Length: 236
Ligand SMILES: [Zn+2]
Image (cartoon, rainbow, N blue to C red):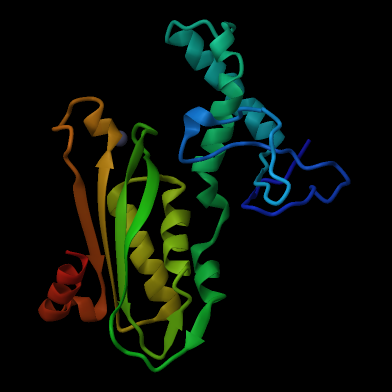
């Protein structure tokens, strides 16, 4: 059995096969509130999440096994629906694999002679480290200096999100964002800085609780000391 595997924000509709859409109260920022199944929906707005049924079943079976192996009872009341919730949460948290950031950027290009720095800062970022599958989160700052074409501003956070919703290391994430923008826009330069807190460090006590990690990746004009300094000053 297959369902839609895309994540569809806000659209109201079925799956195209005459089946009514599944309504879920999922909120990705609050995974502990997932799947309340209270049936309460707004008349004007519904968020539709759909998941691949066979993936959900396969992941859930493994989560049940994990629960058993950590000494839990997967049959106790609080855990009965946990494997399915975890399966859906992980499909959401890794949905970036099925999206192409270069495609997102190339569909929103505009010819423009503006040639000063364009900076989108404080972009919220949520990802999973590939070593522990534990969250890391923080902010990305992305700047570029166009060379004849600009991209719709909302596409920059979108690209950050698509690469973040995969298993990542912060260093590669930083470079992937830079490279996608560089390849599609062919600007005079791109700079990406990410500041993030890694729960695998914080929770396991490897480092101090409030430590954060900063990574940066630049191309072209940002390799110039003054341009890079201006960027760093602007992101403060
Ligand atoms: Zn980790």
